[in-house]
Image (cartoon, rainbow, N blue to C red; front, side, top):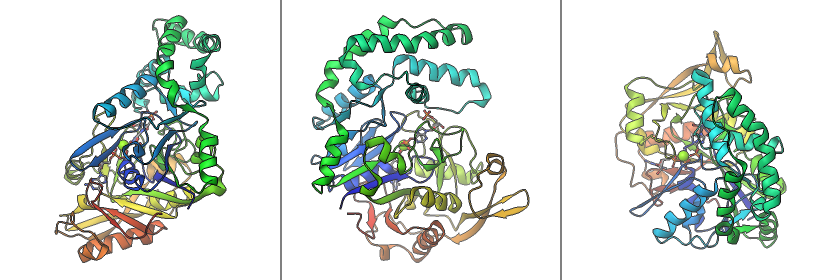
Length: 427
Ligand code: GDP
Ligand code: IMO
Ligand code: MG
């Protein structure tokens, strides 16, 4: 059993952290391949709750080596505080590996993220303000700072100089902000170097050697399919590729090594930040989903926008990721509704559309076409097998599976590790 990818099939916050943690005990490596500390993954182990942002959720499984791949953007101050927070709670983080090719979120990238959003005004993306977009922009513009640059002061200084030459012009002349001093940034970054050094490794080599030795490698996506820079609802997206192909480029592992791609799918839909969301609810049902589902951002504390399940999106996620399985989460949250609407298609300017339109304008005009499925009122949080679920809950899962195009191999009925119904084994 070689490599598996586990990723978000909607707009993020599907429960990837819990799903990764669940598999963490049986895999050798858990690898983040994109994004940074814009992610917020909640993992509940027994009575302990952990909020992870940058570190892979596998860090909570003692036998597993957590890896931050080359495709991730790393804020060193966040990295160190997340590590020490876990150490204080008794979690051993010594196995962590960080790619020397991963890019660094510098303090000026965080500043640029915030001022750009302010400048955009009502057209803003609603980013997490963590410097993600500007850091990826620097990477593509070839003026980024990489983890390995922390170990060559002269190169680091030259690169910070090159980046700030342009940025300071923009900050002072366009945004009316103070210029950022090169030596201050270099000094701050060098201050992290020694603390991070023990973790820095050639992660591409490590992972490929592990795969040759038949070790099990799990790639954990941040964000979700619809937040993908290429395949998401651009421009209301993040600046990386959470979709399955991102695991290959973001970790340096060839596509032939990946045998399974698991889409984490919430039994309803949520989104944080701006952008189109056809099944969004503005009524008491939306409020109820938010309240019962605890739909508040782990990273920014913003309320998540909530809506019914959207099968068009799920089908799209199956297609662009080549999903082999779904892990359906938060089915328990839907307990108590007499009828549950599920979006099966869109109506766009009077036409029925079955698949996600490629045109942004069409997607902004998409109205959900709902099918009503009968609900259930029994508590399902103790269900251990599919047959423990009430008949209507079983039918809901089966209907979603049929509409979404891949088998549902696990069902979440609560936030805890053991609150999961396993149907087909992932390993
Ligand atoms: P991620 O970003 O995809 O890892 O997801 P988040 O952690 O941001 O949000 C998912 C939330 O749902 C977390 O608070 C989880 O503890 C919780 N959760 C995950 N699976 C389930 C489930 O099956 N049922 C319930 N009730 N909560 C769940
Ligand atoms: P996890 O991994 C939900 C959203 C932001 C914003 C857009 C761009 O917990 O699922 P960015 O800071 O990335 O440039 O913001 O993407 N976003 C997320 N939404 N879950 C996340 O991560 C997200 N990471 C970014 O709200 O709309
Ligand atoms: Mg999250």
